[in-house]
Length: 375
Image 1 (cartoon, rainbow, N blue to C red):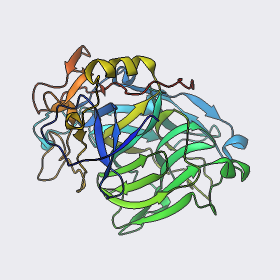
Image 2: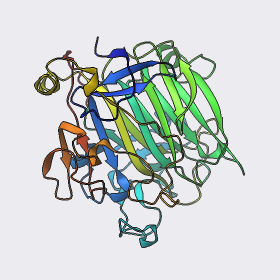
Image 3: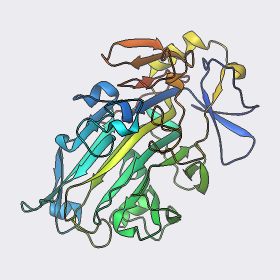
Image 4: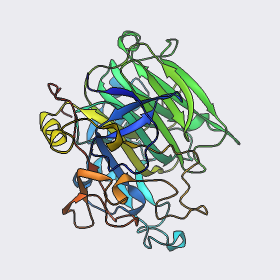
């Protein structure tokens, strides 16, 4: 199996050669994962996100296929990096104004019958099981859907979806979904199945950054918000490797996205982190080079983000009050870190200061046949 469950104490001095562990739903067991992607978008400025591990998507979905009054149009230029001008001062503003971070835009103009939105997929398509985390601030214009999800196909998909029309004066909601053969049979509608839950949030997701997370194990998917466990889903767990996605869109469907919005509006991401297993034989070979014999003392526990990662708060914006293995010297062995010039540096950053452009890849423990999926 491409995963391990181990009972072991939290380790603070490990050098991570044998992977990264996460606590599963608060008990004494740890799932150990061997690959990693980390992006600090507060300090990332680039015109080529593919160099940072993400591929912006460009395609149209017709009105009929989108099942709404408008079609959906995904445009590469609707995804913009907007790094801080001064990495040490939030007051330094961002490169082109507005909220610092990765911006995924939905546009107001839908006169051509399509609502223009944004979507990006991880370059890696070999992701099988893992812990996936995003810190983001949702759109403050009613009528869009913002989503963080893993995808293999329409019947194997793990979603955290946010509908801006569900946000009221003091709170919001997140829709937690496993897309399954049942939802496909129901016209891609998971409502009414045990694999769909609307979870109320005690805050408005459009008023600040929060971390949204799902842990995908062989027997369950566990959802979290700011480190607090929300629910486990145990049926129809995906079994194939795929991509991580983010998107922001509208098709005017009154039963889902609503809208379209009456102004251009953005979803803003401050970081994405993923700790996972891979189906790549090359990654397996890389892992064996640094962890020929599994040693639990060389596994690093992934810290739980227990507070909202607010870049403008008292914790400052250097890391927005969150932890990156890739910024902790020696905690990224066998990995490739892309610095400001996108030249690979082995082993992680040499200081705790965030790099201007950061993507980290680690290597994999178990070799499986890769599942191909192309956009």
